Image 1 (cartoon, rainbow, N blue to C red):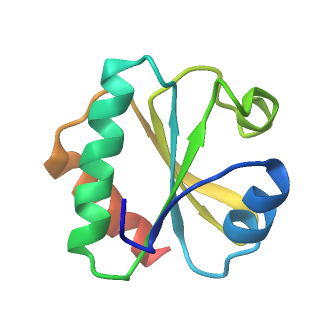
Image 2 (cartoon, rainbow, N blue to C red):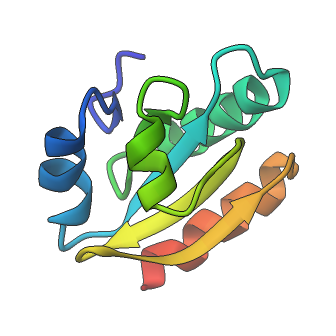
Length: 112
C-alpha cells in the first residue's frame, strides 16, 4: 500500500480527523482480517483508488480491532464499502460486488 490516498484507520480520533472531517468524499472499507470476501473487496477498492489517481481516498477500517467505531457507523460485519463526506455516510455497498460495480459506486460517490 504505497499510495498515500490509501490508509488504515488506527483509532477513532484518526477516523474523525481524516474521514468524518473531510470536505471531500472518502471511500471507507470496513473489513475483518480473516474474511476472504473482505480481502477481495478491499483489494478491488485499492485498485480503483489507484486508478483514480488522487481523486478519492480509501480509509480501511478493521472491524475486529475497531468494533465500537464500526458499530457507531452501523457496520456489524464486513465487507462494507461506504462513502463518507462532511461527517456522514452518503451511500453503502455490501457483499462481494465485481470491480465494475465498485467503480460505479466510487464514481457516484465522487459526485456527492
